[in-house]
Image (cartoon, rainbow, N blue to C red; front, side, top):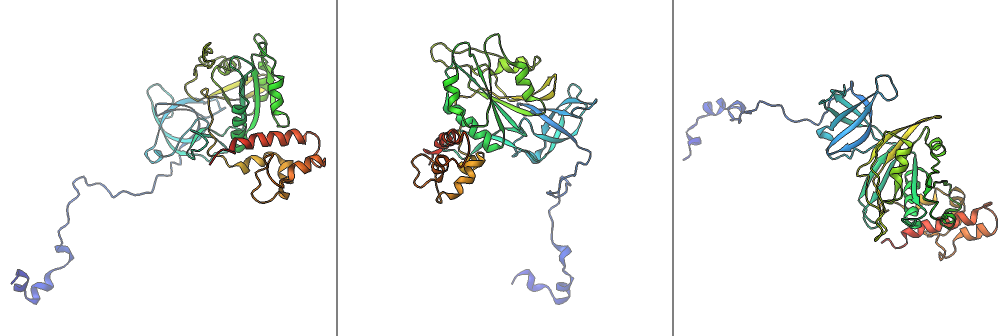
Length: 348
């Protein structure tokens, strides 16, 4: 018989929940909670750059107390990407004095996100910059040779993100860019040309005032040289093109936000590392059509699932162009749209 059988009713009644043994908490710490502090005293800052887990942040922007601080991300944000251009809330030591470190506790809602993927089949996106409203594409007329298809990819990414595209063609003293630029007739694209000793810094700067502009371009096209001309304090490294391969060397190794100050006002220049490819696996083709407003309206008469490519059966766009319903330049816009959409045609 077990020892329980030796207990009478009176002893049994004497047992209650207080007799249950509870393992003591040696650390005497409180149970974890998902509730986070409100951080009502947090300051808002703009992420200028990222270096090995440390974020350079400008707080009190445009105020007399403006200062640049260094911060780390809070533990609860460890899975959230924080990129150049983000507006964040920071707490802790925000004095900006040497050796101080603040903490990022929240990311403000983003107005835009420029993204790319490893290739067109990769649905995993990489965020390049946040809150930009313009993209300036830098391409050389020669040395290295211009790549229209890479520029097409930049345009797709810009239009998908809602960024207004601009283009600077450098080294026009080496080659005439007219044929290259004809590929982009019909696209709302502001174009500047630049030659050795004749860089239109003031005209380009006027387009930057009041905007946050991300600079992109193939390695070796002169992007860092242009950034240094616009922002003399930038000191971005410049390189050269390999005479054997025709490829440029990556000189800018990180994305950084720089303030542009011109006669007409100020803006932001966001310089990015040079790339040789730009994956569009994250982009939906339908988003691109919306950027061509008149063509998007005409496309309502297309059959469901229409690709709008030249061989698409019963596509309404060519008929609308031939009938003159879309106004001047419609043929060029349709050609541009079809060329951009063609970048998706081989994607699974």
